[in-house]
Length: 275
Length: 275
Image (cartoon, rainbow over the protein chains, first blue to last red):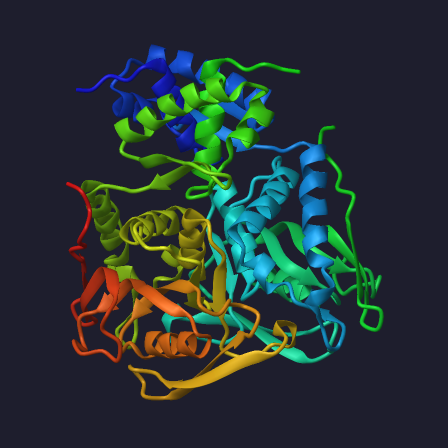
């Protein structure tokens, strides 16, 4: 069987950790792949730990016990958070994005793997200390950012639908009032989608009135599931008092001035990041 | 400024390549991060190249010229393809997934970051030789697999909607006939979503009659965009003659036997993978 050099093992380890953050890899898994003794791999892990620290990628933790192993927990620092926020603000504030009615075209950004990965990096770092079992979103535009967040957390994504689908089996539906339009809307979710008693993080692309997120929170109650946090990418400054107020927003949309073609969008100051 | 050891640079390079496959990184980008001469980085790349080859991760290519640099192109081998396909078949053939009417509950798999990443690995390898500008899907269940494919290809994702949304700006809508239900349905896409003359890969979760994919192909024609390929995760054996026949399916659903609670789903033999 093939043997690998230290350099090669380090490279392969970094690839595996990067592709599956927050996943616990057992030492056995690595020694099978590398055809190496666990003691050798322990030495490799020490080096990988240093790389992750030196480049501010986050942390490599060793977990003891039968279900133990090694896990990479990404955690970015404040300067990278601000850099990501500013880049997003730059993109969003392009005047060509203004749509009649004071809306902004944001779909391309929310579907761009590079941007949603960056968004996910911030969200995952914010909730790094919470135990999350699922990331929950509602279709459609928030799905990519929510998926990337779920991926970084190594947990499943759950997507609430607007309509009942036959392929979902038995479903639970609720009605809610949209905060911005005051219309009554429906959301529906397969009864199989969530385990009772679990903890979820809600992720969505945009929040104005807060009605949708409140609907999601209500739906989570029906499933006997606890909401550990709510992260949205963009929230509007107005209305200040929303139907749901306990959330973290990456960006704050202050104003869309159709006449002068100006979009005012700013990074939101986020707590808990190391300088 | 901080200097890094070779081991550390190799590890960081592997992380960057893994997080953004098919993205061209310039030598300048790396020498800024590592504070190292380009000649040093060239030597690092030689080692990374060997790692990627030795572990069958794909290929590291050096691209000359002003817009040149280094790119990691993932390409998995046939045995890994088969392993991924078999794992998916195992999951999907669980009798508890049967929904009255002969449907199968698949949503959790299509929303699971681990499974959709594996699905994307196969799809990206299949179309590795084609120049793709966008991955296109239709909401909702196919979005995660399509996003992961777009991410591995380093291209944007485009999501066709079922209804017109005000936040999409001016849109183009088409009507199409669903192959399985013969109902007339609508799909709609922002006129900004695709650049004329570009090449796209269509990715979807499930195909029965083929009507939806044919609708997508028709919509791409309206945008003057070329469809370079169609990849679906699961296609049904019946009807054999679908409204669209030029596609690659990862899995073939042969039969759902409600009475005896048996699901027959098999890996599809895919061409072009190295043994």
